[in-house]
Length: 307
Image (tube, rainbow, N blue to C red; front, side, top):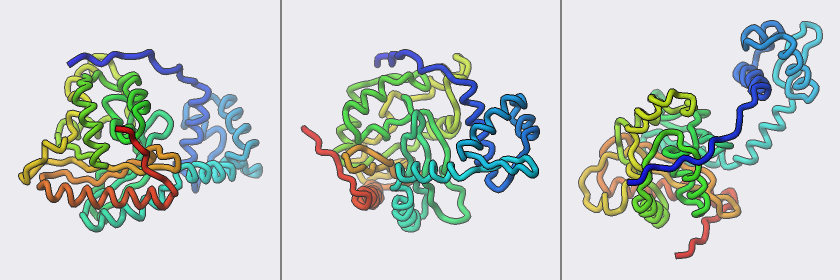
């Protein structure tokens, strides 16, 4: 198998922008509290003049409110408008949740809805049985770059797939293009993906939540890369589950589509154990039906593919 070729690196970071985001992140995580300039500057390790400039502009624009009597800051009304705009962009969220809750109840497991937001994969909805630790959390993010993210371009266009492959990999990765194209054809024909249960791969996926892997030392990245199989290797093909023996399955995933026929959310149903072919098909059928229901309710349509 050929070694994956790295393209040019992404753009530079912007420290001033990061400080603005740092302030907003801190306040969003504490929506019921208000903070003074000195406290915010000290906690976030930002100089008082810089913090004052950030807070003043955000307050002027309505993203924060300032209580002049006690000189404290809190979240502002402009964030409501921004949140609603974002929600419209992901209007399928509440609709998807209703479908996921049905699946979680039927199969007694965690289900999620996730999507690519900017240059990260974000978990947007999570449902599951009460009192049981869920396999994912709302707000978790993952790098959208090989080897992570195949299912977010799998049912899109060939251009989407190639654009993802051209991204600088988050870890060193091997590309077996023949295997990958077979996985793409198989999953597009089936309408869903079945991922094998690989304890090492699962552990790696958990460790990568929220991690910027490019910041890791090169030796660590190479070591992690050695744990990663070639792209698509953890996906079962139809021929892999032709018998009704039990197969170790991590999760099953299916796409939703928007009005232009572009892949939108990915719905996942976690398995985390060995199940038979007939059980795989039963769960996959239910998941695809849920995804199709979401697509229909938001006025979406599946893409028309040429063969």
